[in-house]
Image (cartoon, rainbow, N blue to C red; front, top):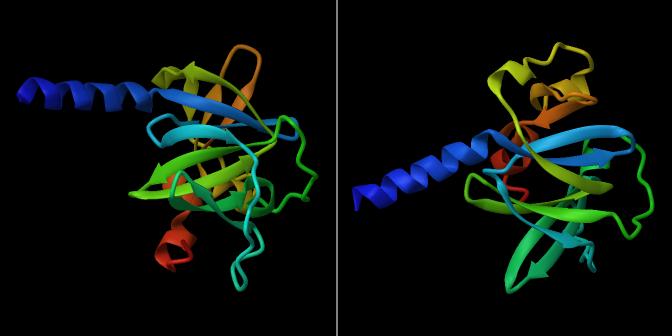
Amino acid sequence: MNENMNAGTSFASDLKDRYLLFNIDDTKYGVSLEYVLEIINVQTITQVPGVAHYIKGIINLRGKIIPIIDVRLKLGLPEREYDDKTCIIVLNVNEVQVGVIVDRVSEVVNAENSQLSVPSEVGEATSRYLSSILELEDKIVLIIDCEKFFSSELDYGQF
């Protein structure tokens, strides 16, 4: 039984060093794979009245109701029409499943500590959601801290 627990712990720690990268306009963002459940196409979203403007609504994913947040709107960026590359990343944050709409998913990367740095206070709206900045050979990736990103929704029970 200990072997299984160790294997699970090892698997989770392996995921912490891996990131799913996605784009919002020309900016690359990433989330730790430890939070990612799946990536799905944008589907019909049922609007819910009285929620924050960036919460697009809910979907029914195989019998489970999932709230959907538009990352662009949460970051204070203008809304854009969805296209064939727009998708929903389904995340599990503190035992709550939530979907985030992104312009496009690009790749999964491994990161070493030497490639990660603490974000400076560039802009309040964006930097408060970042855990780190990942420097890859040809690009800079802003790593979103999922717990900070969803803290207001989780704290105020908007999900």
